[in-house]
Image 1 (cartoon, rainbow, N blue to C red):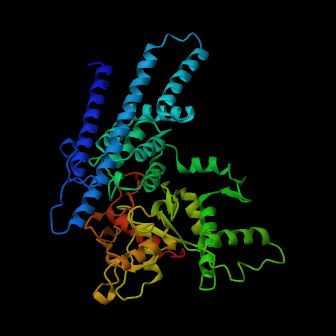
Image 2 (image 1 turned 60 degrees about the vertical axis):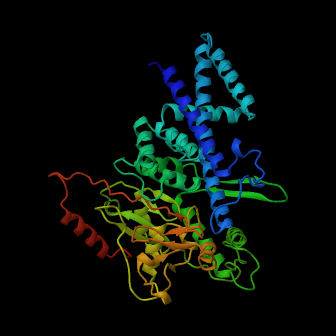
Image 3 (image 1 turned 120 degrees about the vertical axis):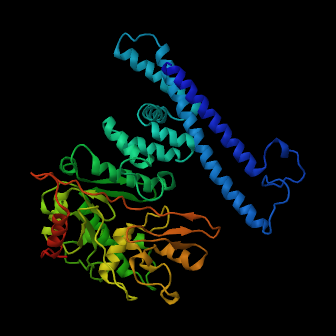
Length: 493
């Protein structure tokens, strides 16, 4: 069977999948032909009286089911659009006369892009980018296109996969795709499936995995990019402007956490500014008054030290390995940066070592009501951010909380602790949303008032890559001794 026949079959399957989705949606809403003229059809499209003792609850459930089916239908439509576009491009290029020069080839490609732009009513730049995404999905990312066609990921997830696999060799792209979309992969992603992560969180996880497994070491890439550090100024409307800095991750994280800590110190009943406004005012004050006589700190309040967690594989800390460390709130950083932070005794950065056997952090715990600083750090490390699905609020801004209240018999152990942000902490205590199901390495999921359970994102800890010793494999006793020696070393822990 030639490639065109295969394409035809795949397109037909995509059309059938989209039709099945439309039929499912029609069944949910009662909007099929049998109900089109029914006098019992209400303005919401639900035919006849709703069954059950609680009609409003039944209606709410039907609406949520309809929203879910619409999301799957949108994904299947996107997959169909990808296949149609790829087929059009292939057929057009095959029909085009042989170009006599590079100029002629460029003109042919411009004509192709212009046609797609006009049909989709988008700009030619957007059409060109879309054609590139279709090319990647149909030639290099079969699992992604299959998941899109099945409705298990959205178009936004598919675009992120294209972005994060760009500039990787075919083996690297296939490995990244399999990690998130193939449950039978050697080391599949932990926690909820990729399609159940909001796109921003999926991008963060995909990027972190890409950093750890990139064929070019993170040290080389960081050295090259650090030379491009800069500050940029962009005027904006209404007398405003953007000032941004492209900096090494440890420097940027330290600045961010320091301004956040100072902003929180200024908050109170008499302070009308929001946390976001306070961060901007503090940064401006520090930049404009540093080294001058009118430097009054941040509104007269001493600037607190920030607390940034640095997770370091033991061998990378000892200089025997080159696996990336992880900077809380950012992601993978070069091991040399982590070693420098720890060796210099930076008081704002707290070292967390990972177990060389499975890559998980070492547990810290106690049984009294009050949490120690070490326990708070552990919960921050386990969750990484607010554990509510899709929330991206960084861990330093969140509040440690008992999942089952202490007064109701809950204990102060890792399995009963979460760190929701202020918004979702209020949601827990003021609504029917309840967290549940935490463990030492798994953040709590959440159950909605409708009874639906939504899992929380999990950290993708991985066992480290050990350099092979002369005699073969390291014995486990050596790994345990390595952990113990490093933990008890006088290195600021």
